[in-house]
Every structure is written in C-alpha cells, then in structure tokens.
Amino acid sequence: MIEAIVLVGGEGRRLRPLTDTRPKPMMPLVDRPFVAHQLDHLRRFGVTDVVFSCGYRPEALEAHFGDGAAVGMRLRYVVDPVPLGTAGAIKNAQPALAGERVIVLNGDVLTDLDLAALVDQHRRTGAEGTVALTPVEDPSPWGLVRLRPDRGVLAFVEKPRPEELVPGEPFLINAGTYLLERRLIDRIPPATPCSIEREVFPLVAADGALYGFPADAYWRDIGTPASYLQAHVDVLSGAVRTESPTGDRYLGPGAVLEVGAQVGGHASLGARVAVAAGARVEQSVLGEGTSVGAGAMLDRAVVGSLVAIGRDCLLADGVVVGDGARIADGVRLEGPVVVQTGETIGGGE
Image (tube, rainbow, N blue to C red; front, side, top):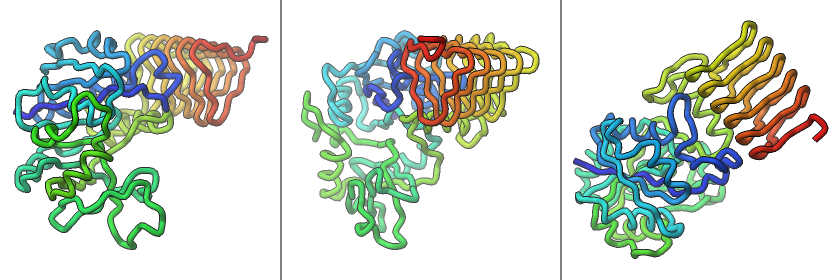
C-alpha cells in the first residue's frame, strides 16, 4: 500500500485576503474544501493513508477532517516548526511513514492525473524519484524539464529565456506530483529549509535516478484568484474529474435565490448565500453567508464569506473581496480590485 504526503504548509499569499481567515487547502472549491478533492483523487487510486505536512493554520484541517474515518482514510498531521520548503517538509514527515515509497502532492494543484500509470512507470524504471510533468505553451514562468528518450531527467532550466528553448521540443514543467523512494528522502538534510525542486532533484537527476512522467491530464495551480475562479468553472463544466456536482451553477445548502435573481455561467454559491430579486451572478464564487442586494451584478468576481453586497452594485473582471467586507449600495468595482477582510466600501465611509 502506497502512502501519500500532501504539502499544505504554505500561507497562500497570492490568494490574500481570502487566506487571511483560512489556509489555502481549506478554500472551498464548489461543494468541498480544495484539499478534499486531492483526497478524493488519492482514494480513487487506492491510496488511503495520508500525512498532511502542515504549517499555516493546521488546526483548520484537523478540525474538519479529523482522523479521516469519515472519508474512509487514515489521516495524520505533521506540523513544521518553521517553514522548511518542500524537501524539508517531506523530511519532517518521514517519521510518520511506514513504507519504502510515497506519493507527494503539492497542496495547491488540482489534477486528475493517472496515478496508477505513474506508479507503473516508476516501478519499471527503478527510479528513486518520478516527477509528473504537464505540457505548457510557455514554460518561462516556471521551469522547463528536459528528458532523455527513456524519460530520465536530463536537465532543469529555471524560467528559461527564449534563446534557451529548442524549436520543436516539448515544453514540460513540474506538475507538483511526485513518487519518491525512501532512499531519496534519506538524502534530504533534517531540520533544514530545503527545496526538493531546486536542491534535491538536480542531484538525483545527475545520478540518473530521476525520471519524468509526461501526462496530458487536467492540471491547474489554484494559487491565484483568477486560477481559483477558473478551477470552479472547470469542476462545474466537467473539464476535470472530481466527485463534485456539475452544471451551470452550484447552490450550497440553504442558498436562497429570490424571484428574478439570475445565477449561471458556472457560478458557485456557498451555504446560506442570499441573492435578491433582480440581481445577477455570472462565473463568480460567493462564500457562505454572503448576501447580494437587489439589482446587483457580479461577473468574474471572487467573494469571501459573510460579505454584504448592496443594491445595484457592480463587481466584475477580477474583483476579490475578503471575508466580512461591506459594499454599499451602488458601488462599482471593476478590474483587479481587492477589498480587504472586514473593509467597508462606499456609504460615506
């Protein structure tokens, strides 16, 4: 039985102010916390023994998932004493592992990668580590991974410049899913901040023991508001396999739409959201307990929990609103505008 480590220690700074009040893995994605989708993914492939490697607000995960019995899994929690980086976090979780092989997931990646195929290749090659890779049109924001014909990792090119790219080569980047042997983890220094991508993998590759696993599976890093919003669209449209419902909208338990309210475009409304008559919500995310006033318009907005949006407001084109904010009647916000947690906009404030 293969175990798994899910790296959930980051502060989610790119998603602030939404992560002011919750860790990024607990951000809702349609009908469940984001990290629940990762647990669903692991369970579909028979992985039921999972260690959460935590840092920021670990109590939120444990309070929600407990020991995992409710979801048919065994869940444990290891908290990094200080930020340790990806490799340091894996090393800190090593004492909780019983086997010789572990799947590691970055805690901000939504994917339906075929884990069985990843494991099969890893076994056939005798690798110390296998890195899932995803194709992109432009690798410059990330790091290009070059492979030998046998899929052994030849080189890592961090944020490659145009002149470093080879015409016709596949642009493959690290997809944030790894299969590691215990002997690879043994290479990581204990109690030391360390990046597995930059400090460990290049050494293993130089020894010929690191392989890549290119896959065309769905892949999305949900770490920015725009990508987080698109992940909702993708789940609801069925672009990625999940256990969540699909359709043009999701209404959480107790959500109320008054007569004449319009909600669609793969919008996702959390529990107890109230949308008043004449209001329209398109391709937006609204956290639990939020209210939308009559005649308001939300289009491509991400709104936290317990937000009050007044009558005839406009929130569009990338507006992000933190928990507990208040938007007065008639306020218009367009573009990449951020309303902070608890902030009041308009109304003479």
